[in-house]
Length: 161
Image (cartoon, rainbow, N blue to C red; front, side):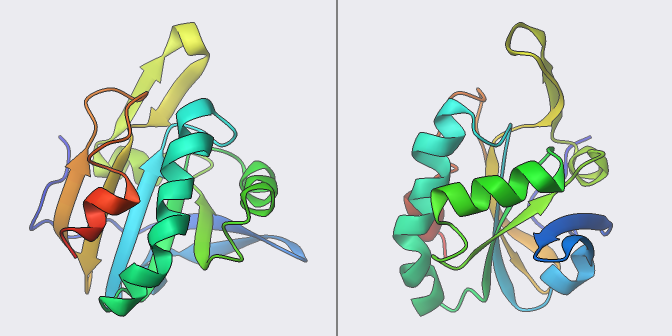
């Protein structure tokens, strides 16, 4: 069952690529204060690279003006891919944090996993964006199709901040 507004964000360990290699990150570190989190089906994929990540890069400063402490991107990919994608997009320089849900455990705990065999995607994350305050999901906007990026984009979530 998918989590919804008013639910607590699940805990768990994710991975972040650092200069010293993959480092384990506890999701509890990303629950304090106000956090914008967006998740997507895969690094270096079409809509994710051309629409979703750029929308949060464009709006990052406006989120901070509205009191958002962190902007986090989560995907079911390995940390090496997420690190390369963060550099390739320039998202790290824009203040976004890319986290790897390598085994999909966070995505499954959110109830947001899906399969798209024709695209070679298995146990991936649905496309969504949420505002979390002190660990509670305030706003959750989930796309109907993984190829869409309208209600989960930066501009749409910013309207709810």
